[in-house]
Length: 125
Image (cartoon, rainbow, N blue to C red; front, side, top):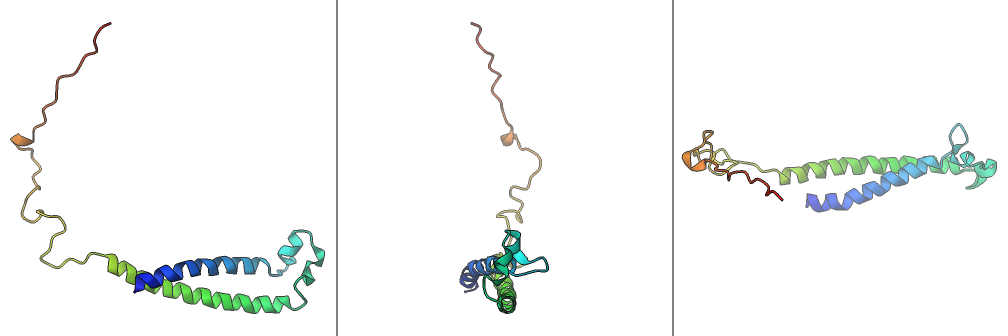
């Protein structure tokens, strides 16, 4: 359940992040905002005379949505990570045969010796 919720909310969170970035960029700052950066002196009234107040309220609302989504994604992400971890009981081992001693020898046996073929010399032309 947490995995499905996480997969649904993650793209929505990405969209909210991009929307909030763009929303902040179009607002009027102390220097005149993004519209004055492109040379538009009349850009202050492009969206109406009260856009500063409306954009401030919309930005605050989008920020609240951003915070709530980030908290829910952290909680669901923790649940997804907990579902994906392997929990071992006290009697279980991680590697087959590691507890019984199989495959743990550090000295080579006679059967483990490696015999190399003699080097091949190139034929003379």
